[in-house]
Length: 162
Image (tube, rainbow, N blue to C red; front, side, top):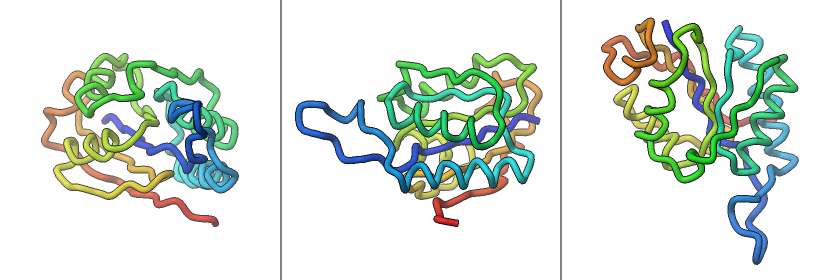
């Protein structure tokens, strides 16, 4: 079995004039949401073995807060190809993972994260900033990630203050 923890980055400050979207930082509320979903995933034994994220500041910060709060001890793979990625780009990344990994987290942006969840599960879920979808795939190989009949949405965690 393989599991993908799909995360839409937590809420971020509006883009400042002349700085642009890429450098937007997470807000204090967003940081609380990241700590909360990290705690909830850790309580359910769903801490990933590897984290891959967009290299946009808010995605990296979401990943870092998660890592610090959940006890994740690995590196965070901030990939520049994932800032404007499509769901197909994410699939290519997933298909290239080492099969020794059973659970990975991906942290990215809409519309790609919603499209990826839809592509994998066949169901559309609106993912607010900070939402987490845990998807289980009945496969031993990441190469089969989009070709397995045994795909299940295990949980959907909406951002909350508690």
